[in-house]
Each structure stands twice: as structure tokens, then as C-alpha cells.
Image (tube, rainbow over all chains, first blue to last red; front, side):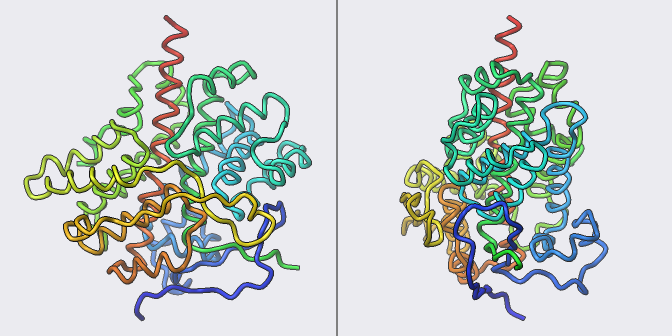
Length: 201
Length: 205
């Protein structure tokens, strides 16, 4: 079959930032589950990801997907030391809000709410944007993540000093940098290879 | 070959063995190793598939240039510069970068409540001379890279159709998308950790 785009017909497409469990559908053909080889399965890292059209599309380049997935997991899940998970998810949500990735923001705002128990503050960030006042510690993380998301990046010493004044040590500041930077990878894939679909009623 | 490649983030962020930032990165060994493996998978792949190594270096150089990161641009462009056969690309890339500067992110949301946040900015088209020199395939890749870097929320199936029309395959588009997006990540880590390293050194001085 020749390569072609997919133009999905979506009713009630998501048009605002939400913490609801919305979906995502690709604009290019993912590999079929039955066609996945050992190399593809290794690229998916977790066998359950073979169910996801997003990962079955990315697995067309399995080596990159494998390394990307493992980078992602360590940046967000390795929380024995460093920044709490909630604030790594906050950085991810801010990058997604700033870039305009409605799907990425939905997933990571849910994680930020769950881990911080500050669902209302997270919703304010989604509703009103990255200029909201969420208290100084979160404001410092939001400002740093916005600056890292800008192109060219505007992240500077003032952001480091503000994070440090808000109580973050060097490892925790490095975690903010990685969380925001990683979503500048993820947002670009999610926004350019497909689009969000409404939550299943 | 891969064993001799230094850690690119350490190299470009100026992180020296034994320094405070080196110790911080040691606490995220998997992040460090897998970011490097991502780099290797994109720039030293076992099999280049539908995207040649020259195309990969050229696109990464363009992305670094759009971010106005001269050291990272130099890093990606140097294999082209050092090759007699590919050196001509450097001037073409520099001219395209010069014409493609913008400040992002901008772009349009799907029509609805977020439309009040729509903001406009340039849509880059490679110059006629650039297209002539680079060929349709690489020219289309640079135009797509500009979209992904500055106004990613304008992405559309049509943008992918333009790549297919220029000779890209579905597999090639996946690699291209990963490459542009990875370099966007890598640049931010390098810029962020580079500043953090300098600030730690100042505090210790």
C-alpha cells in the first residue's frame, strides 16, 4: 500500500484544555499489531503499548522510540531523590499548555492533580494559562518551564535564582529542566502526527 | 564507533567529570544514557533507512540555527563542513536559517474558546535558490522543521501530505519528526544544564 495521510472525521473534537480522559488519533498509518516483529516489540518497551496507535506509529523507528521511552520514564518516575512527581508533571503540563498540546496537557494535568492533590490550581492553569498565580513555588516552576519552552529558549539565571529561592536544590532544578525539555519533544510528536478525540462518554 | 562518541549533552553543556553537575547527572543515570542512545539512534543509526545521514545532519543544523544556539549549530554542521562533498550545504543552510528566524510558540488552536489565544507568526518557505540546491525532499523537511519548532499547533494532515508529495515515506516522516523533536529537547537540556552548571560554579567561587 502506498503511503498516505489519514484525515479523521471527528465529532465534538476537544477545543479546550481539560483533565478529562480524551483520546488521540493518528494522521499516518500505524503498523498493524499483527505485523510487529521482535525489534518492534523491543522498541515499544512495554507489550501493552502495542494497543496504542500512537506508539505503533512511532515504532516505525524502533531504536529511537525505545531510547525515548526510557528517557521519559526516568525523567518522570525516578523520584527516589529530587523533585516530587507532582512538580515534574507540573513542568510537563506547563510546556504542553504553552505549546498548545491539548492531548499532552490532559494526561499530565491529571497526573499533576493526582500527585499534588491541587486539582483546582491545575485547572486554573489549564483555564487561564501560564500567567496564573499558584503560589511562589509553583509560580517559579511555571515561569521556568515557559522560558524553556520558548524558541529560542529564554531560560536564564533569573529563573535559576527564583527556583533556588523557592527552595529547590540543584538536582530539583535539573528535574524541572528535564521535565519541561522532555515535553518539548513529546508535544511536537503528539501535535504533528495526529489529533485529540473526545472522551468516551 | 558508538563507544567513542562522547556524551553530547555533557560536551555541549560544558559538564566536566567530577563537577557538581556531573554528580547531579549521575543521579539520573538512565536519563543520561537514554538521551545519548536517542542521539545515537538518530545520528549514528545501524540502518539509516529512508533518511540519509547527510539529511539528518542538515535538518539538525537547521533546528539548532532556529534556536540561535551557535555551539550546537556548529556541532551538527561540522560533519557537513568537514566533507568535501557536502560542504556546499553549509552556506545554503545558513542562508535558510537567516531567513527563518522567529519567536515561538505561536499558531492557531482549533476553532473554539481558545481562539482568543491564537497568535500569528511567519510560515517559512524555502527560497527558490535553496529549493534548487537542496532538492524537494530536504527543502520540504526544513519547512516542516520550522513548523514543528515555532508553530507546532498549526500542524495538520496537509503538512504531512506535503512531505509525502516531496518524496518522504511514512517511516521517514516518523524519523524526521523524532529528529526535530529530539533536538528541541536536547537543546533545552543543554541550555538549562549549562546555565545551572555556571551558576553552581559561581556559587562555589
